[in-house]
Length: 129
Image 1 (cartoon, helix red, strand yellow):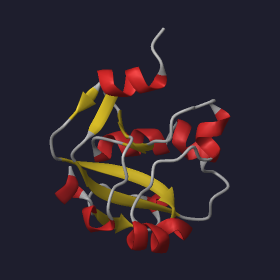
Image 2 (cartoon, rainbow, N blue to C red):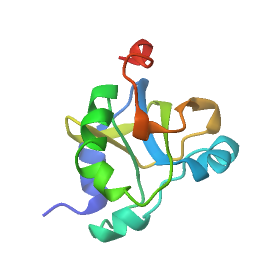
Image 3 (cartoon, helix red, strand yellow):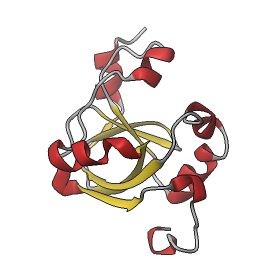
C-alpha cells in the first residue's frame, strides 16, 4: 500500500489551471490576506485524512453537482459559502471531479466569484463555464 507522500507524488501534475474552491464566507478575509494553506481541517478529520491538502473542483459544473449533493449536506450549518476561482500549477488528481494541492496557494492567485453560493446562478457565472 502506498504512503500518503507516495500517493501525492504519483498523481502529481505541474501545469497552470483555473479551478474552483468552496469555503465558508467568513474565511474570505484571511484567504485574501495569506492565501490558501494546506491543512487537515474539520471535514478532512471526519474522513481520516492524514496529509494536509487543499481541495478544488475542476469546473463550475462539478461545484454545482457537489453543492446539490454531498458538499451541500456537509456545509448545511454554514450561513454563507464563497466560491473562489484559483490558479494552481501543481496538483494531484485522483478522480475527475476533484483536484488536490499539497502546497500553499498565494492570495494573488485567488479571485472571489460569489459569496453566497447557496443561490448559485450558472447564468451569471457563464463566463467561468
